[in-house]
Length: 154
Image (cartoon, rainbow, N blue to C red; front, side, top):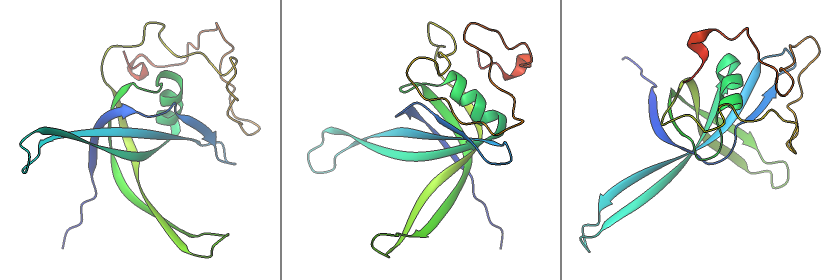
């Protein structure tokens, strides 16, 4: 029997991406996505809206690009796969689980923000801790010329 695990979602970010790095230097970003569904209520006949909140995890260059260009409220399309995380709660000892999407591809939707990329973490937001040997992001006002043209989302 064949198995298939593909998810495609389009929605708006519920928060700014949270970028972190693994001890080996791999970037990982956590995103929150709100996906709306409009439907007609069978009993009342009125249009209703249902919002589903989905946790998204992206890795590598996708994570760094998302952190640099995406902000809360931006529309985005995510292609990925479902993953079930399971753990035991240290306080209560109960088993917990959480379903999330591991994104393979992000596509920015809508027009780019007026100022281009969001400011780097010098304005009140803590910088993501990069391990030793990892390349530091450019200082505010500097241009990183090592970004290939096809990686620029607009």
